[in-house]
Image 1 (spheres, rainbow, N blue to C red):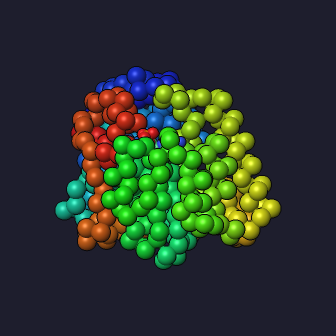
Image 2: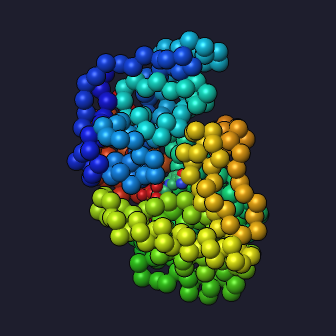
Length: 355
Ligand SMILES: NC(=O)c1ccc[n+]([C@@H]2O[C@H](COP(=O)([O-])OP(=O)(O)OC[C@H]3O[C@@H](n4cnc5c(N)ncnc54)[C@H](OP(=O)(O)O)[C@@H]3O)[C@@H](O)[C@H]2O)c1
């Protein structure tokens, strides 16, 4: 079978396709024929070696998998050959055949488009949990999301609008219409000072800021909150410079995150961090939560949240209340091109690898 590997950390050029033996399921695993593997900015961070807990190269990237079960390992009781499943693999999905733990696989109906479902696994799940599990947004609250025309940003706008939030989103001027389509106020992050603009628009700031960019932006995001607002930091977008690791940006990211965490602890504002991967391992998922909110944690409950939230997203997909857009379906052998396109195609939707 074919799989994509990263044999050393770097830009898209480090992705190569190799032939190898198909894996066999171990006890508790099912082996799945890949139908669709999502390509995400988080995959780019794994490829570049900037993701926290990145495996040693060589490894196969691929955070989001949809496939059909072809073989069932010993001890599996729930899944059968022929079942369609989705899984948050974190890495490994860019391959024709992938083994996953049965407990990490969520069944999906056969009549849904696998490419659209990949968007639910990481992108929409992140947006959903940021809004409903961490920030716990209420109807009518104001939410500012950075990178609002990107994949997670668009999902936040869609889900936030469904929940009756007042939405603000930073994006490039060319993506203004994509942000406004969801009823959000677009703020041009390249030309406008978003902090001044938010204050001008709201008077006292926003209830929630969702920050997937990080670094110096987090400091101003904190200042954009109302006196009891919540900031969720969930990404290191700023730590990649032209697809490669930037040590300067890393240092800035940690410095800024520590600074907002400290300020959160000293005020009525709350600062939280979100990592979806914590669900995968079934461990506590929030390394920090400062301010008045209680710590969000507890492994088993979090693994259950993933299943519950996935079911909610699938229901919204089936009733067309959310519309994950697939920008392009590309063969597995085009993984490098998909990574090259990733930054410039953010507002076009999901890039998906297919067999
Ligand atoms: N914690 C988690 O579990 C988790 C889960 C999923 C994603 N993430 C992280 O979330 C971040 C976003 O992911 P994504 O998939 O949405 O990425 P994406 O689709 O590539 O979108 C990123 C967007 O951010 C915009 N942007 C770049 N710099 C900006 C700035 N300074 N201010 C405002 N917007 C800016 C880009 O716009 P331009 O193209 O116009 O610059 C682009 O539209 C990444 O860091 C990703 O790793 C974290």
